[in-house]
Length: 425
Image 1 (cartoon, rainbow, N blue to C red):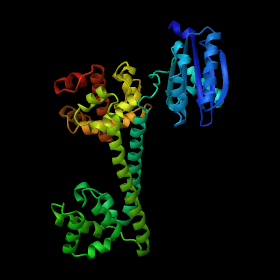
Image 2 (cartoon, rainbow, N blue to C red; image 1 turned 180 degrees about the horizontal axis):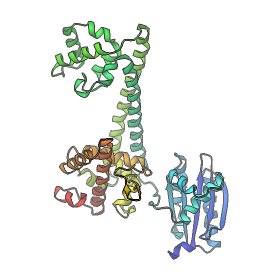
Image 3 (cartoon, rainbow, N blue to C red; image 1 turned 90 degrees about the horizontal axis):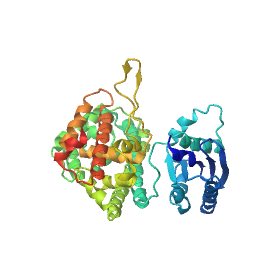
Image 4 (cartoon, rainbow, N blue to C red; image 1 turned 60 degrees about the vertical axis):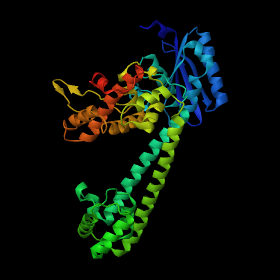
């Protein structure tokens, strides 16, 4: 047993938007503190003073504080506790954990009510039982950059949702366009200027009745003469128009308005995404220059993905090995085994940092287009299964990228092809 644990104060904090409930216990499970404060700076200073006095009165030398990641409400209190000088002499460690982790631990207390005091106690008891296996929270020097990279994540997810919603309206108007295979799609970009005009302004009957010459001229004009084979595009459009179901004429105008609204929303979001990308590239300069240079040396990552990874990792020294970093990102898989049976495919845990996981997966999606080793690994994993092949191969490739990133950052080395084999396999 670690002797330090006998002289440690374990503190659980149940966080909400308006209040924070503190529960502190010693190694024997004895309650030494139980109190609630409002979620503001003056009250948090009082909480630290009470923790400090409890440590002194009970002759304890260490303190571990555990909070759940509760939307944005845990940020200020976690940052305050992690950077408070009064607790530094007690080797204070603050952990902000995934609520799913504490929820699973809570199941061991089948007879306890779910209240703020009980929630705070369970968090403290998790630390007492040694069930916290992630890295301590770090006061965020990269906070400003992180807000930008997380805003980018939010914009990308919003764009994806809006596109999915718009496609449901497109199906109602052009059913065959929705189900068309890639080789039969008339648009290289379903959300481009040409497709927007045609999908929003024309009905299937309009396209069928328009002459080939007029449609070719229209497509070339809207596409700024970028179509290499406009006749082929027109043929595909007319086939889709002929094969699509027809609606009552009264239904087209409302659907046109809905589709146009979605197109405009997507355009506005994508314009904002460009602004965010420029801001990220500007703000990363001067922050973690060495780490940024190392990640940028990996072909395909680029400044935006590198900034996203750095803003979530902070310092590589917080992670003892690449497994710890992968677990922090949620790129781990639970083993499924019973008797002689062992499942070939298992679900990814996804209990880690969703932002870091997103940037790693997006990064490796680009890296595999530039790296032969990653491309071959992705292809091999893709061919191993018949269902969910792409997502599985991409996630496994991201796990391999974690190993590469950890090795390069830990050894302070730039990417080199003659070192890839040693780092990846």
